Length: 565
Ligand code: DQQ
Image (cartoon, rainbow, N blue to C red; front, side, top):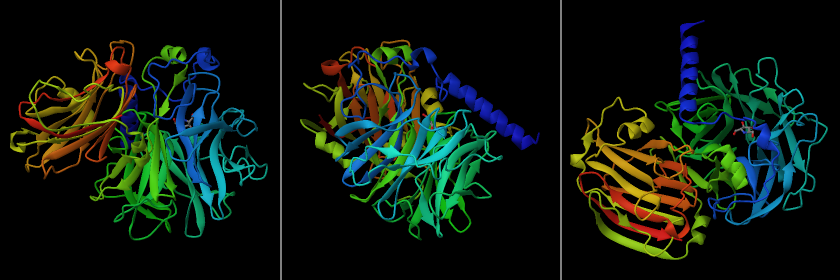
């Protein structure tokens, strides 16, 4: 074996071991004993109030989100028979506002030889003339993964309740000899360029993660290009690829087929081995069927992530009403399978986020859709509060912090005191670990959410600020689940990500969406995001509080805090 191949295989194995040690669940693991165990009761304690959840049972990937004929549609992977992964169908809900959802009957389920063992993830495309088509992965009787299509039975039904899988043209794409038929799935939304329609399908060639590119003139007969659109050695299987344009100068999202000088492209892949969503920003050359990440964009395990916490298998779509691109991501449970069966449910979709290119051009920024703000009721304001070392300040005076939208701005008077940053600290998650019990100069400071009065349980989301050799600040965002619950049998990771800000105004903002067992935190206007799934036992309902804290030696001011319920 060539040295480089051997090295990347070793890297893949090593990363797999790390993932397992970190508690990441292998994909598509079947728990036969629970798969058909329908829930008789549904436990409310950790159920969310304003996140997307069906009334019961298991959910995973968001599928085929779109806006069509007055409704937002969300399909998702669902087990109608139990609270673990299995028996997967495309469940379906519609909404007028992305907040209130109406459940409909499953849209796509195993019924044909080309999907008899499963209807897995995929995307929706609205072709010219308002022609809606869903591309999805079917599992055949031999467990081979095929790409199929489905169309509405009645396109003038705004609910698009019933879907058919036409005989003609199905299965749509079967794996050829080059393709690994057991890792070939999750077709993207189609886009048009150079007179052809294009889709990507995620896959791997041994340890090389691959996005195969298929082209079609008629949207039905697809031909694989000689070279994949993109591939990266050592990254393992690529699931749920997403490929879309972002505007360099604009503040609006772009339709999937948009091209031009003002456009960059984003390639997002969900890495099966780590269960995180990574992306690069780059240039798409439609005439060469090639995508090249920009210089400096790490391509793979060290790459940018849409979310540095519990978020996977995301999918975006263009909303023509508000001219925005919206991304949905799935957040898995991190309790035990037995807990999930007892709860009668597992999995949520995180709040949909608008996604734009950051003005730096180096990363994306995401922000909860504005509709979520219509849920705001009672508000509590606090301003100009000095956060003294070791003296947390309660923000949720007199109200519950179990479901809240918290927006805070910290100001950091003295950046000069920041500790030096060691350039060998490449991995933010490791750095959060390394500094776990270290009092810094600037930080840790941030929020403690889902916290009991006496802090027996709490989930901290916080910053540490360092100073690089050129005196530029390096901002680290962490979240440590160790004290999130008194329960001992749940996965309690430490998450971390760097936040690319220059702190010229000496201010750093944080927004946390708290909803009983989920906390989604957006730093610096959505440059870095960490989502947690946590299971407090005492910090629940009226007993859940929100604190601002500073455990660094240097003073921090809580300049503005807004807590809305
Ligand atoms: N989940 C689906 C697959 C996809 C994976 C099956 C990602 O199509 O690759 O439920 O979570």
